[in-house]
Length: 445
Ligand code: BES
Ligand code: ZN
Image 1 (tube, rainbow, N blue to C red):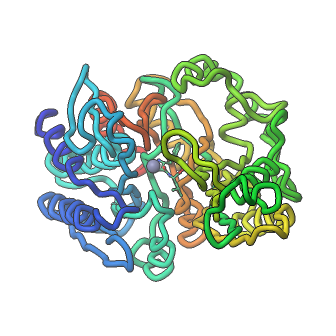
Image 2 (image 1 turned 120 degrees about the vertical axis):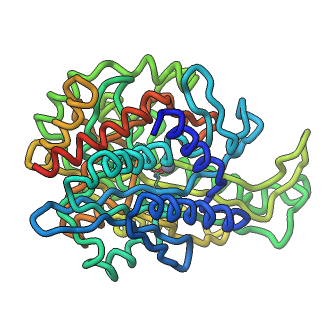
Image 3 (image 1 turned 135 degrees about the vertical axis):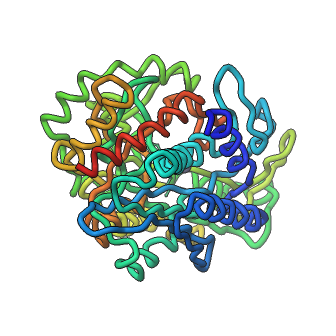
């Protein structure tokens, strides 16, 4: 199979608008899962499409034989929404190559990365007749909405998914060509609140000053969540379980290239901002945060409209670090919100999805094997990092299946995951195919 054949297949995979959060795309998401099923069948693997109350889960296996370790490769075929679509330079579901880089929603997160593993396995099957391990692919369609049906699936299918280690490529590389093993991720806890005031929007001249304004109160409550100067979260008990960075991590991270300038340029912000006393790596990978992800209420149209809106809403998420418990954090934040809510408005709090943070030791057993595979693939020493994003199912692999997860990322810092112009270099895609083969070889030893 040529590099062009592999690219053609990635393009086919990327053309499915498998946006898991949007029910208008339920059929596209299912078609995408069925494309994977057909792909595994063509490769001669046994494959099943498992229905769930949401999007289906694809499980594929080679023939498992006694005396070999079992490796589970996890990935997701769902993608994030594409809006604002007008900011894309080419349509998000019509993959386009510019300067050796593929532009499409899902190119990096996560179709390009998981297809590289699939095609690596296909190549081994064609050239060697088998891969050197017992292999299970688990590819789900709900990662971007918090994997609501995967936890129950793990619990119900322990025997089917039994393995010695999990491998995932859904994280990043610190720079192009620099192999990177991610040994930790932040967890997440989402919630939203809605404030209701008067029955209807009111004239702010007639009632303003005598009736509380829900949009104003929402802004005040949101502002009470963190200190504007120090960036500290002001929710009581929020930091109680937080573990400090270990010395070896401090030492390793201090050798990473300074990424502040790059981040400054990539984001276009007037100035970087974060918790006092920590550098940007610590702030993003090892410190917890609270963020407003959405805030609304009142007149959003052109010009002015003098009105007291009847309601307002705020969507929040916290990124969590070891040993913060997502349920506990949701409770602490909810009680902060209630405490700061005046009696002049009604508050409703809705908890959202959540997931645990994850940290493993990268310098034992399978972690060392992964480092060897990365070194062999990229011909350079791998960097050991944590990252700030979340893949909630990874701690569940530990809790339910009792195994660690090796995260060998292929995403570049400017991949624009979740944003317009998401992209993935062909070079990284091809490296991923080679990396899969090197990894399975090392894990078999
Ligand atoms: N690939 C990301 C996770 C990620 C992002 C890892 C950045 C390392 C660095 C994944 O697809 C993702 O976006 N996860 C969501 C999870 C959430 C919806 C539960 C996230 O982190 O927002
Ligand atoms: Zn994502």
